[in-house]
Image (cartoon, rainbow, N blue to C red; front, side, top):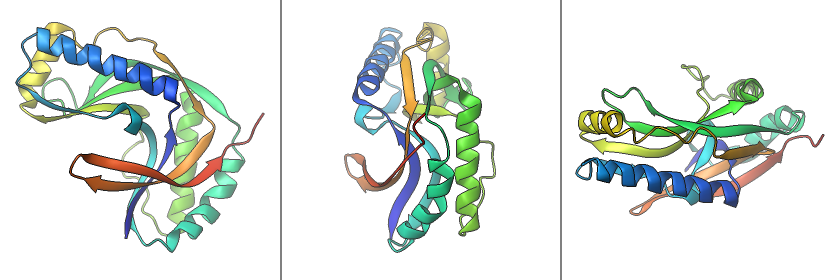
Length: 197
């Protein structure tokens, strides 16, 4: 069994910029006295846009997934979305995830994620129970989330960063996630390119 998800990978330039954003937010938190709040920052090389999490699958299912997703993804024209604006899930009272948002042609992105969800449902994966929220996860608050939320609000640690770059939606990938002591390691199993325009 392998742990898998469908995602759009980021290019090196955008990952570098997001690493700088993480460093700035971390510095603001430390300056505001939040150094004892435990936040686990996603390594910039591991940041990706998840379209659908599949969970543990048999390796034999990879071909089925390719067959199901191929027509859906290949028929979609390539496009880009803007990256910027920080926020948290579920809210600042007790944040668990720090994210950076996506804007611009988000309707097309939501449609792509919905098409992926429906195509995989046909071959037995459950439909998403909640609306898909386009974002890139930068960090997870591991403990003392109430204090973290108060700190983010008091220091303005999440303010700014309204536009940091763009993300090209040109390839949807089936990714494998291997959990290691140092964190998750991702590798691409399938690359499904969107249509060039």
